[in-house]
Amino acid sequence: MAVKIRLARRGRKRLAIYDVVVADARAPRDGRFIEKIGSYNPNTDPASININNDRALQWLLNGAQPTDTVKAMLSYRGVLLKKHLQIGVLKGAITQEEADKKYQAWIEEKESSITGKRDKIAQAKEDARKKAHEAEVAKNEARLEAIKKREEEAKAAAEAEAAEAEAPAEGEESEAPAAESNEEEENKG
Image (cartoon, rainbow, N blue to C red; front, side, top):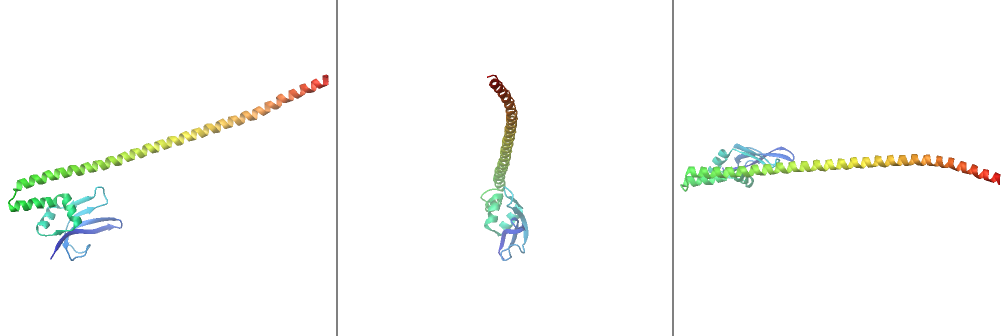
């Protein structure tokens, strides 16, 4: 019986979550499996990979073949490196202590790079949020300035209309005495 380590889909439409399972190669994708050894969520950034490294290593040493996607995940988690080092120990090329030391050094380096990536993503999100906030504040200030300008223009227009309304009334009064003085001059003359 050929045994594969592969993904089994679950979750809703467009938000899939996968289980990492050990199954017979003839079984359907979401059907019967021998053992569930982890999960994979591609919806997060970076993608969440939770695998029981010890069980995955045991299945690999027993001959289970991972699919391409699972192989990439196992490599990302360091399981394939651990398998490689364990085979070296079994053949006598290196000692168990040396293999463990190399594996721990690799794990620490990998964890620091993952943490760095998460920090970088969080910082980028924070910068984008601050930039959007500053743009919104600037836009609101521009709107307030436009409203104040319109209010000032409306006030100036109202004052101008009031001044025009007063000016013709004064102009009529000044014309009336002028007309009276013209009449008086005609009467005298």
